[in-house]
Length: 76
Image 1: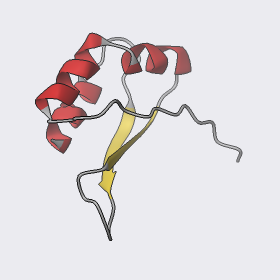
Image 2: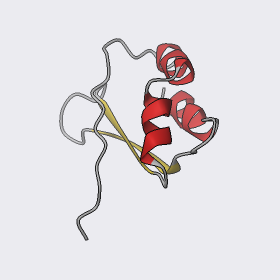
Image 3: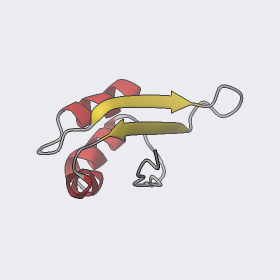
Image 4: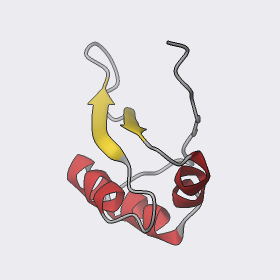
């Protein structure tokens, strides 16, 4: 599952995600995952999040529910 999502990130058209990471809970439900990546272009990241490529990769990875997607900015 994680490798399908990483592959979709790597193959994203335009603004490729930088340093994609996939996590799951260390203590509880290991089927819930969090994907985190950096990007230089938030607009393209939003386009990627809405893309058919990501939806296909999620289906291939066995994702059952609609994702919750957040776009965050560092406050450093």
